[in-house]
Length: 163
Image (cartoon, rainbow, N blue to C red; front, side, top):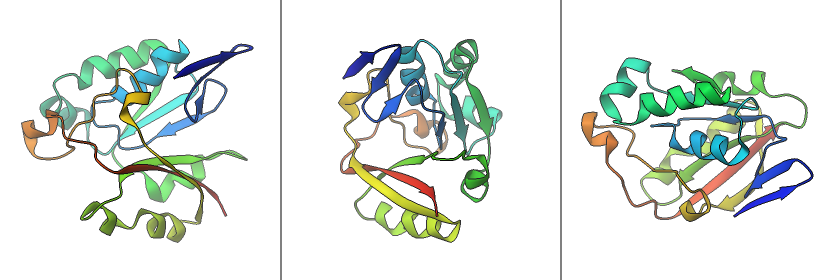
Protein backbone atom coordinates (compact mmCIF):
# COMPACT_ATOMS: atom_id res chain seq x y z
CA UNK A 1 0.00 0.00 0.00
CA UNK A 2 1.42 3.37 -1.03
CA UNK A 3 0.58 6.33 1.23
CA UNK A 4 1.26 10.01 0.44
CA UNK A 5 1.47 12.61 3.21
CA UNK A 6 2.76 16.17 2.76
CA UNK A 7 5.29 15.41 0.00
CA UNK A 8 6.29 12.15 1.73
CA UNK A 9 5.50 8.90 -0.05
CA UNK A 10 5.49 5.71 2.01
CA UNK A 11 5.46 2.11 0.87
CA UNK A 12 5.27 -0.06 4.00
CA UNK A 13 8.35 0.76 6.17
CA UNK A 14 10.06 2.76 3.40
CA UNK A 15 9.69 6.51 3.00
CA UNK A 16 10.74 8.88 0.25
CA UNK A 17 12.29 10.93 3.07
CA UNK A 18 14.51 8.06 4.25
CA UNK A 19 18.03 7.59 3.03
CA UNK A 20 17.81 3.93 1.97
CA UNK A 21 20.56 1.35 1.44
CA UNK A 22 19.33 -1.88 -0.20
CA UNK A 23 21.56 -4.96 -0.11
CA UNK A 24 21.79 -7.99 -2.38
CA UNK A 25 19.35 -6.70 -4.94
CA UNK A 26 19.48 -9.57 -7.44
CA UNK A 27 17.82 -8.10 -10.55
CA UNK A 28 17.23 -4.71 -8.85
CA UNK A 29 13.44 -4.94 -9.24
CA UNK A 30 12.88 -4.15 -5.53
CA UNK A 31 14.90 -0.93 -5.79
CA UNK A 32 13.02 -0.05 -8.97
CA UNK A 33 9.69 -0.72 -7.21
CA UNK A 34 10.59 1.86 -4.53
CA UNK A 35 12.00 4.35 -7.05
CA UNK A 36 8.86 4.10 -9.18
CA UNK A 37 6.61 4.62 -6.16
CA UNK A 38 8.66 7.61 -4.94
CA UNK A 39 9.17 9.10 -8.40
CA UNK A 40 12.88 9.40 -7.57
CA UNK A 41 15.74 7.32 -6.20
CA UNK A 42 18.15 10.05 -5.13
CA UNK A 43 17.69 8.77 -1.58
CA UNK A 44 18.50 5.14 -2.49
CA UNK A 45 21.77 3.21 -2.71
CA UNK A 46 21.18 -0.28 -4.13
CA UNK A 47 23.87 -2.95 -3.91
CA UNK A 48 24.49 -6.31 -5.51
CA UNK A 49 26.91 -9.04 -4.54
CA UNK A 50 27.41 -9.64 -8.27
CA UNK A 51 29.53 -7.69 -10.74
CA UNK A 52 27.76 -6.01 -13.69
CA UNK A 53 28.98 -8.81 -15.95
CA UNK A 54 27.58 -11.49 -13.61
CA UNK A 55 24.26 -9.61 -13.34
CA UNK A 56 23.75 -9.53 -17.09
CA UNK A 57 24.41 -13.28 -17.29
CA UNK A 58 22.18 -14.21 -14.33
CA UNK A 59 19.13 -11.94 -14.66
CA UNK A 60 17.37 -11.10 -17.90
CA UNK A 61 16.04 -7.71 -16.68
CA UNK A 62 18.87 -6.64 -14.39
CA UNK A 63 20.67 -4.23 -16.71
CA UNK A 64 17.40 -2.62 -17.85
CA UNK A 65 16.46 -2.15 -14.18
CA UNK A 66 19.90 -0.70 -13.37
CA UNK A 67 19.56 1.70 -16.30
CA UNK A 68 16.12 2.83 -15.13
CA UNK A 69 17.44 3.28 -11.57
CA UNK A 70 20.21 5.51 -12.92
CA UNK A 71 17.55 7.71 -14.56
CA UNK A 72 15.78 7.93 -11.18
CA UNK A 73 19.09 9.06 -9.61
CA UNK A 74 19.87 5.86 -7.69
CA UNK A 75 23.42 5.07 -6.56
CA UNK A 76 24.02 1.46 -7.72
CA UNK A 77 27.00 -0.43 -6.27
CA UNK A 78 28.30 -3.91 -7.11
CA UNK A 79 30.21 -6.55 -5.01
CA UNK A 80 30.60 -6.60 -1.20
CA UNK A 81 28.48 -5.24 1.73
CA UNK A 82 28.02 -6.05 5.44
CA UNK A 83 31.55 -5.37 6.70
CA UNK A 84 31.36 -1.81 5.32
CA UNK A 85 27.66 -1.16 5.87
CA UNK A 86 27.91 0.53 9.26
CA UNK A 87 30.36 3.06 7.81
CA UNK A 88 27.68 4.12 5.32
CA UNK A 89 25.02 4.74 7.96
CA UNK A 90 24.22 8.24 9.07
CA UNK A 91 22.88 9.03 12.53
CA UNK A 92 19.52 7.29 13.07
CA UNK A 93 20.06 5.30 9.84
CA UNK A 94 18.90 1.71 9.43
CA UNK A 95 20.02 -1.29 7.40
CA UNK A 96 17.14 -3.49 6.20
CA UNK A 97 17.85 -7.08 5.20
CA UNK A 98 14.95 -9.18 3.94
CA UNK A 99 15.63 -12.87 4.22
CA UNK A 100 13.93 -16.24 4.40
CA UNK A 101 13.50 -17.35 8.01
CA UNK A 102 13.15 -21.11 7.48
CA UNK A 103 15.85 -23.78 7.22
CA UNK A 104 18.39 -23.77 5.59
CA UNK A 105 18.32 -19.95 5.26
CA UNK A 106 17.96 -19.51 9.02
CA UNK A 107 21.42 -21.10 9.35
CA UNK A 108 22.94 -17.96 7.80
CA UNK A 109 22.49 -16.30 11.22
CA UNK A 110 22.24 -12.78 9.81
CA UNK A 111 21.57 -11.26 13.22
CA UNK A 112 24.81 -12.78 14.58
CA UNK A 113 26.77 -11.58 11.53
CA UNK A 114 25.38 -8.06 11.94
CA UNK A 115 26.18 -8.07 15.67
CA UNK A 116 29.79 -9.00 14.86
CA UNK A 117 29.92 -5.84 12.70
CA UNK A 118 28.65 -3.60 15.51
CA UNK A 119 24.99 -3.55 14.46
CA UNK A 120 21.92 -4.19 16.61
CA UNK A 121 18.51 -5.55 15.57
CA UNK A 122 16.00 -2.73 16.08
CA UNK A 123 12.93 -4.35 14.55
CA UNK A 124 11.78 -7.41 12.62
CA UNK A 125 8.75 -7.33 10.34
CA UNK A 126 7.10 -10.10 8.30
CA UNK A 127 7.76 -9.56 4.58
CA UNK A 128 4.80 -9.71 2.20
CA UNK A 129 5.78 -9.61 -1.49
CA UNK A 130 2.32 -8.30 -2.45
CA UNK A 131 3.10 -5.01 -0.65
CA UNK A 132 5.75 -4.17 -3.27
CA UNK A 133 4.26 -3.89 -6.79
CA UNK A 134 6.83 -4.53 -9.50
CA UNK A 135 9.18 -6.53 -7.27
CA UNK A 136 10.11 -9.91 -8.78
CA UNK A 137 12.10 -12.11 -6.42
CA UNK A 138 14.85 -14.17 -8.05
CA UNK A 139 16.99 -17.10 -6.92
CA UNK A 140 20.40 -15.37 -6.58
CA UNK A 141 22.66 -18.20 -7.74
CA UNK A 142 22.82 -20.96 -10.32
CA UNK A 143 23.74 -19.22 -13.58
CA UNK A 144 20.68 -18.57 -15.77
CA UNK A 145 18.59 -20.40 -13.13
CA UNK A 146 19.07 -17.22 -11.06
CA UNK A 147 16.55 -15.44 -13.25
CA UNK A 148 13.77 -17.81 -12.22
CA UNK A 149 11.12 -16.93 -9.66
CA UNK A 150 11.01 -18.86 -6.38
CA UNK A 151 8.31 -18.99 -3.70
CA UNK A 152 9.15 -16.36 -1.09
CA UNK A 153 7.74 -18.44 1.76
CA UNK A 154 8.42 -17.30 5.32
CA UNK A 155 10.47 -14.08 5.17
CA UNK A 156 11.20 -11.18 7.48
CA UNK A 157 12.76 -7.79 7.05
CA UNK A 158 15.42 -7.31 9.72
CA UNK A 159 16.10 -3.67 10.55
CA UNK A 160 19.53 -2.96 12.08
CA UNK A 161 20.99 0.16 13.68
CA UNK A 162 24.45 0.98 14.99
CA UNK A 163 25.09 -0.10 18.57
